Length: 228
Image (tube, rainbow, N blue to C red; front, top):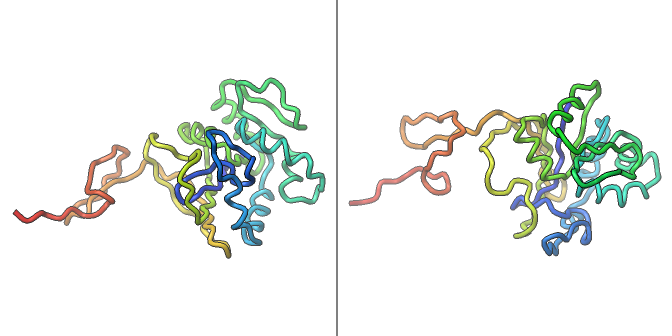
């Protein structure tokens, strides 16, 4: 199966509590529900398409808790989100959850990377991660995620948990699809493309295909000689 990760992020990279004010208030986060004003038919169409490709779900503990408190209450089997979530296999990565009450859920508590490799080796379409920032970062470091869907919302929040906080190895991605909804949400579909490359705008300089960060002019601008 292909391992995909789908995440809602603000312009400043925040992914915390996109769907409701009380979804995740950890750290005193006061801005839950920030995606709601941007919901439209275009966004709904993407979500339905995405969930139409899934054969199993992989979730972090916090996302599992959020999903399992809501989606089992949506009992319409034709619902494009609730239908797959309530019936297909779900795997939750946690060292503290002893038993998962949500039907058809398996807890992965050790050897996470190896367990994910085994899941990926099974026949099927997609093994989907939704939200689950810490899990995404750990599997990204292992090179296990095949495709990323980042829905970037035109809002700056200024605080909250971010998908990619400071640190980590610079990495490049290849855009395979992109579209914009009627409310300005940009949906990027990306695949890993190896280490990030760095270079210079100086005449004759070549881009260095290296993951080693090279100091350069601020904001990526070409350096300009200062007058003596």
